[in-house]
Image (cartoon, rainbow, N blue to C red; front, side):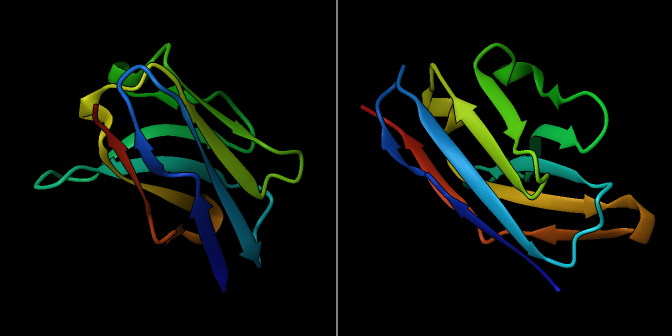
Length: 117
């Protein structure tokens, strides 16, 4: 089994920064995709940024230039550096690990981010 543990959420003022972390453990195929999703209250979960083990990262338009996704050398940790945060970034942020070869997805428990003055 694969487990994902997120950390780094919290309350921040508009214009502030937060760094989310997600650590994966268990049986992890080396070719995988790690991504961050978010779900605001009353809204559907949406992809924020994705980082395949091989290939380019991608972002939704609303966070381009403000958020940066990165991974460590082991490819088992993923980070989301969030700068210039806006109230509309308020949501629960989830880490997801996808292993295309096995057609499986794993989700973390979520970490809450609140942007408010």
